[in-house]
Length: 271
Ligand SMILES: NC(=O)c1ccc[n+]([C@@H]2O[C@H](COP(=O)([O-])OP(=O)(O)OC[C@H]3O[C@@H](n4cnc5c(N)ncnc54)[C@H](OP(=O)(O)O)[C@@H]3O)[C@@H](O)[C@H]2O)c1
Image 1 (tube, rainbow, N blue to C red):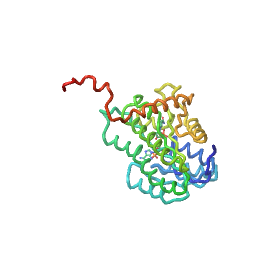
Image 2: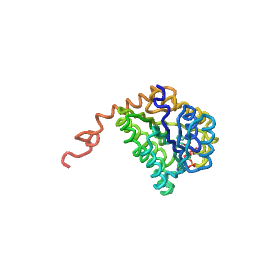
Image 3: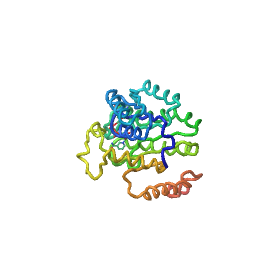
Image 4: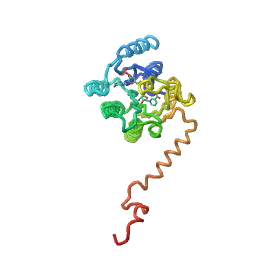
């Protein structure tokens, strides 16, 4: 499947560096005008100028701290009002790898604001407009930790589980109404995010680290193939299909009028 609306403007959060900036490069190459959102204005402007110079696309910079409601509201209004924007790519995110017992509640809350509240509010601001016109694309950068929260300390994995489940719910509600939805689940990807969490990829086996260009190119190939969930490093997609099938097998038993027998066996008959 090719990109249906190559001229739609894409709003990218977390576009100043890393995964978001790499998407910006690839989407500009495909001819999309871009709105680049993050806090670091100098970096955003340098990227915007390069992309316009190299690919001839229109680019705009929007400085916003997406943990702050006033800044977020500006982006929400833009997504709700600007009819040229047909795509939203939620890449802005932070990873706090501190154990739950030791994590600062304020830092945990900031992570939830950025990883959960911001994509939820931005999608909510844009979706009614996309549904009205019957087309659009929403890409959410989650993480493989959505499936394996045990591999990292703290609440980060849980924040990415939210984004994965939110994407699946969105696909159920809007997928048949012309809205393309994709959750991307990167493994460890070489970006600056590791500098912010105190660990660096150098401390991790090199065979588990992907270069950001390869990750984004694979994720876009997954989008082009119509995937709703893309795990760039997964060699055999049948493994994912089996995981989904195992989840589906639970469905008929998840809500019943009686508790399972194993929870009743110890109750004395005269209790
Ligand atoms: N790298 C990995 O190993 C990996 C693996 C799985 C998933 N992910 C996910 O991929 C996404 C992108 O991560 P990355 O690796 O590209 O990280 P990164 O290199 O640290 O980039 C993060 C981006 O988010 C922006 N950002 C951070 N805080 C922000 C805030 N408060 N408001 C607005 N923008 C903010 C940053 O720009 P400013 O500082 O200019 O605001 C930057 O553009 C994240 O959601 C991350 O959780 C990454």
